[in-house]
Amino acid sequence: MTKMLDAVHTTNELPDSTSVVIIGGGIVGITAALTLAERNIPVVLLEKGHIAGEQSSRNLGWIRKTSRHANDVPLAQAADRLWAEMPERIGQSVGYKQSGIMFLAKTDEQMALYEAWSKSVQPLALGSQLLSPKEIDKHVPHGQGKWVGAIYTASDGRAEPTIATSAIAKAAIKKGAIIVQQCAVRTLSTTAGKISAVVTEKGEIRCEQVLLAGGAWSRRFLGNLGVSLPTLPVIASVLRTAPVEGPTEIAVGGPDFSFRKHKDGGFIIMQRGKVDAPITLDHLKIGLKFRDQLKHGKDSLNIALNGTFLRDLAMPRSWHANSKTPFEHVRVCEPQVNHGLLNDAMNNTISAWPMFKNTKIEESWAGLIDITPDSTPVIDRIKTIPGLTVATGFSGHGFGTGPAAGQLAADIVSNVPPIVDPSPYRFDRF
Image 1 (cartoon, rainbow, N blue to C red):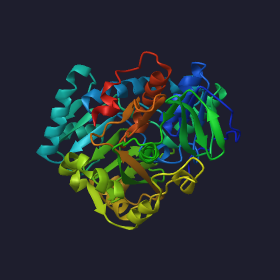
Image 2 (spheres, one colour):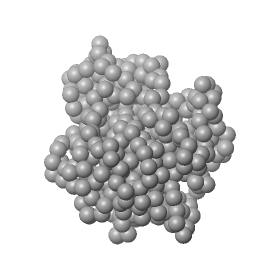
Image 3 (tube, one colour):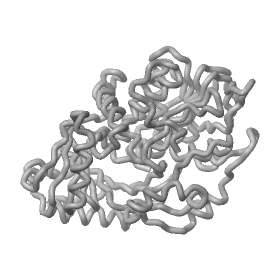
Image 4 (tube, rainbow, N blue to C red):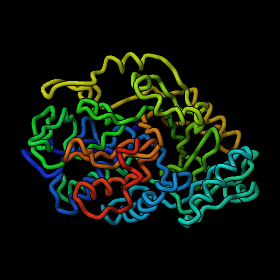
């Protein structure tokens, strides 16, 4: 876990009842809690570990529209507006800066993909530009890489994962939301076929609706309820450098590295071309649903059968309300950092921009990402369990859309007109 995460102080007391219970203290759940509190809807958020302890503080901090599926772009556009308004809304900076994002192409094939994407989103008027090598050097000078071209969206940006979710949580509390950390939800109770309570390790809370925003844990929680959510885990390793001048404020993604400026003057860097994909039982159970992703993206996956499989196998997939759950055994998931990938990332970055040479690495961490078969989240009601809504499966880009995704989930829960068309995020599309 990154050592810069801003802690949030919360109550240890569970209320007897509320209108909405949110399961999960990442950016989506926290933003949903803020939205509901602003609407004067009683809400309690429960987090098994601590706020933003997992992927919401471990991501790159990119806020992008670039390279998203066209039907996912409206959510990202709504998020841009909400990120820009967030400091005034919550009374604190979240490190948001509309500094642009650029993806580099080393081959004609890569450039053709960016050209095709640019055409697909042309009606959305994103202002994305296809750049020549000379234009790349103008935006990101002093490089030595041989690029065919790039795609650049000036209206994309960044925020700081180590402060954003925590700041939003503090504002939600001030506006009336109740947040309880170190409190795992074990299961749901129903009356007459509809949710009537959540059962936690600390007791029961009566409620009318539940929003599950549990990230990579959502599949296991739903599985205990007889609902199959098709997500598989991958692990991304990330590093932060000491302050260094760097070539640009723009976040840059190459085929095998990425970097973006951090608020302290350093850079957040990863090996963009590789993530770890340790095999789990779920790969055997639902792997065929991901065959298209595997076909086109197998070179980016470090697939391995290792101790992760045995640890996953030993973790319960069903339990009773009075049983200790996996969420109590693992409060915060701490994947192993792949230092080999980070060495590659640093070397590749230096090869492209030599000014990063001799830069000191301050820290590194890894995060678990839940991937859906189409890399698009689920934000929808679960029809078989009336009163249950899910917002999960963000596939590595949930931080950027987090404020809009949380508001969309809150819109569904509170039955108001949604911030964007929710149909791309239907649960029944799988």
